[in-house]
Amino acid sequence: MTPASVHDNDQKLVELCRAGDRIAFDRLVVKYQHLVVGMCIRLTGSRADGEDTAQECFVKVYRHINRFSGESTFSTWLYRIVINTCRNRHRSWWNRLSRQSVTLNTGTDSDGTGEEPTLELSDTRFTPVKDLEHKRLGMAIEQAIGELPREQKELVLLRDLQGLSYEEIERITGLAEGTVKSRLFRARNILQQKLKGIVQ
Image (cartoon, rainbow, N blue to C red; front, side):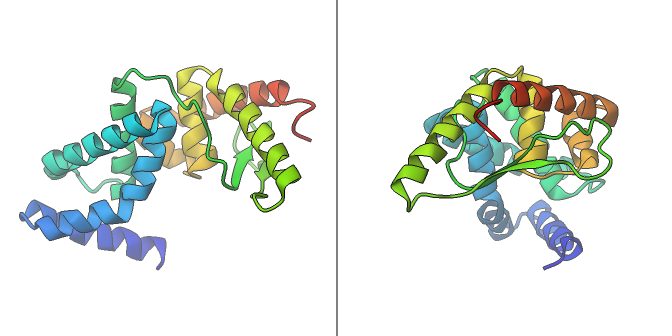
């Protein structure tokens, strides 16, 4: 399914939700629950808190679906709700990273042009020695990201783990694109320094 068709399908479900169709809302929940729960767990640092926060997010979506203007995609609007809800929980951000395969941009491309170098953490769970190394690396990255200021952690999550565009991040956070790029640039430099000698 193309991005355009995904957006169109979401729009149809939103319209049905506004008309009081609970099944349409349930379909939106099923479609996005994995993403929302995963983000909330990372941002609150706790599975229990993350699951509670995700539920709170969907309650807000249900209550405020009529406020969705359609100027952005539904997913962008949903990300904004997730970010704001997690901020309001006043929990520590991102106390752990998924041990699954993840790509983290670590380039110094402050203006967002050209290719952004990436760090690929592949899933090596079936090799005990490599699995240990993988977990050690994951813990090092977890600690490094955990020491970032909250606003930098938030942007690293949206850009490097969720793969959102700068335009989408701007809509979600309300920050200017230049501010997003500047903070990401500083965050990636900090991560590179902290992970020097660990990540090649």
